[in-house]
Length: 175
Image 1: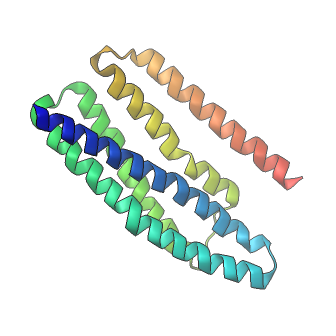
Image 2: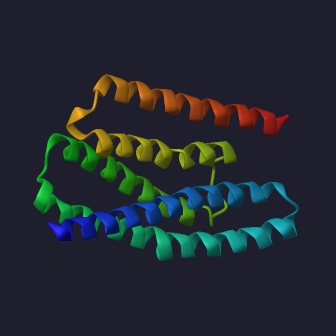
């Protein structure tokens, strides 16, 4: 049983590392894209620097965080089994892994000249892990006692606030 506390500790550490990397990576994507709005030489210099930072963050921090999270999460299943809340958590983790892989795709796509996403699109994309984090934390804390109605109202409300804020900031920036 003591091993479970070690597994849980490493799992939480992995989650913190992984989410930190994904949050920062999304922000770097916004900066990288918006560097196009600067004078040519400054833009090129920044884009080279952002590309290096994105690559190091993606491979040096995000991937290890993902691996630690998944390995120690699976390790805890021996003790917990796979109740319904774990099944939902699996689904959220699969979505987060999909997001992670999407970041890898966007990182490479940003290096091309035909990248069509705007800064606003990238800001919205950057909020996906926030919604997944909130969902996962509430699920893990409440487990079987979760009220699905309250859960969905909370997630929808947070999503609306985030997306409205991004939209309003975009309007303010474009003025």
